[in-house]
Image (cartoon, rainbow, N blue to C red; front, top):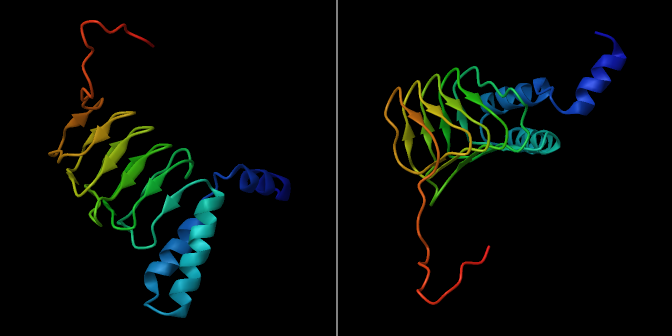
Length: 161
């Protein structure tokens, strides 16, 4: 690959080769100064790519990010299984230091939100824009989000958009 091509790929922000190299190296080191330096470098690299993967996140193997880290937030307490696909603008967040545990061979669509201490089974597909806050068994497909009525319209009140 030519130098020009490498510069273009690096500037585009899709090349996560260095990020994953730092991630693996950081996981191999124990606690201490080197671990802290690698965590800092990994965080800066993720920020450059427009996302965040917590330093204590457990990613088993072969996590595929087809659109790079663009808009992806993964909590430091999350666990992600093998061969998972995560598209852009996905949030895997925590509530009271409890984050999702995602099984193997899962697909998480663009803009999905998985939050809290939930378990996502293996071979689960989470549709684009879905909000998941409850456990999902193996092999299911989850779409949409649960809606909640905040306030009802009164009889003498007009609808305003």
